[in-house]
Amino acid sequence: MNGPERLKTALARGIADRVPHFEMAYNESSIIGIAKHFTDNLPAVDFVQRMSIEDKIKLFDALLLMVDELDVDGLTLRILTKNEDLDQNHFKDIWGVTYLLSPAGDSPVVAGPIKTEADLKGFRPPEVSEADMLLLSYGGSKVKGKRGIVMALRCSFRVSWSLMGGLDKLLIAYRRDPKLVHRLMRMTTDYIIQVIDMAAGMGTEIFGMDGDLAYDSGSFMSPTQFREFVKPYYIDIVNAARCHNIPIFKHSDGDLTPILPDIIDAGFEGIHPIQPQCMDLAEIKRDYGSKVCILGNVDCMYVLTRGTEAEVVADVKRALAQGSAGGGYIITSSNTIHPDVKPENYIAMVKALQKYGVYEGNTIRPID
Image 1 (cartoon, rainbow, N blue to C red):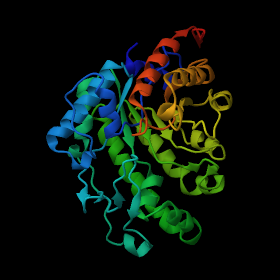
Image 2 (image 1 turned 60 degrees about the vertical axis):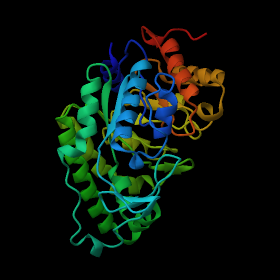
Image 3 (image 1 turned 90 degrees about the vertical axis):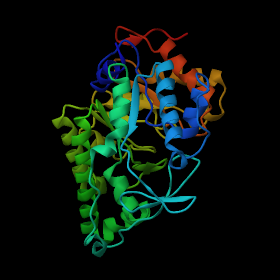
Image 4 (image 1 turned 180 degrees about the vertical axis):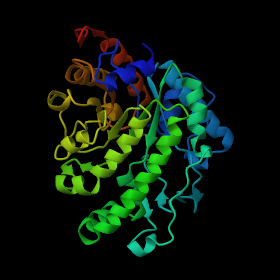
C-alpha cells in the first residue's frame, strides 16, 4: 500500500498493511531540526512570516524531503493567505484578527474586529481564491500517489471566537447574544465550505479540521450548547466534504468526553488526537472504534519533548497496543510536532511505528 491508501483505509475503519502515520502540523524550527538529518540546504530558524521567498521555498522543500526520507504517509497543507505585518511581533490575518507571533507555535489572538452585531454591518468575509491554494497545488503535485494530501481547515468555532477577540467572549455571547453567535458560525462555516469546494478540485484527499473544543478538565461548553451552537454547522461542513467523497476528521485537544458522541454524530470519519493527559486511548477505541477512526496519541507534552528514545519507543508500543486492533487507527503525536519536540525523538517515533505497526490479520505483529 502507499500513503494515501493506508490513510483512507484507516479512516474507513479498515485494516491497512501497517498502521499509517502523518502529522497535523510541523513548525518551522521542527522542520529544520528534523530535516538537518537529511540535508544542509536549510534556512535559518525564523517565523515563516519573516522569511524571504527563497527561504520559504527552502523550508517547504525541507519538509517534502523529510516526509519522503521518513516515509510518512501523509502531508498536511494549509490555505496560504497574505497576512498584514503590523510590527515585528504582531500580524493581522485576512479576517482582521490580530495575533502575536509566538515561538511556541500557534499564535495567540490579541484582538478581533467583532464585538457586537453592529460590527457585522458592512463586514465582509474574505473571498477564497486559487492563489490561496498555491501550497496545496505545489505540494500536492510533489507527493501525489505517494503521500496522502491532507488539507487542514480552520474550524468555524475557532474562527468565530478569534473574530470576537477571545474564546471567553464567544462563550459569554452564548447566553447574552446567541443571535450573534449563530451569525458568526454561519458566516465562517460558509467560508470553510468554499475552501472545501475549491480544495476538493485541486487534489485534496483528506480534510482535517483544527480548533480546540475542550480543556484538560472537560469541554468548553455543555453538550446542550454544543448541539445548539456548533453541531449544526459541523454537519454542514461534513456534508460539504462528503459531496466530494472526501473523508474529514476533527482535531481537538482536551477532554472531549462530554461532547464526543455529538462530534461523532456530526459525521466526522476521524477524531484526533485523544490527548493522553486527559483521555484514555484504549477506552476511546473500545467505546467508539466501531463508529470512527481514532488518530493519535503519542505524548508530545513530555515523551517527545523530554523523554529518551527508549521512552519514545515504549510510548509508540503503548499507542499501537491500545489503538491498532481491527484497524481504524492512525498513529500521530498527541498534537503536532511543535518547537519543543526533539527532532531525534520524532525520528525514533516514526521508525518505531514502522517496525512495530505492521498488521498480520486483524492485529499488528506481536510487540516484544
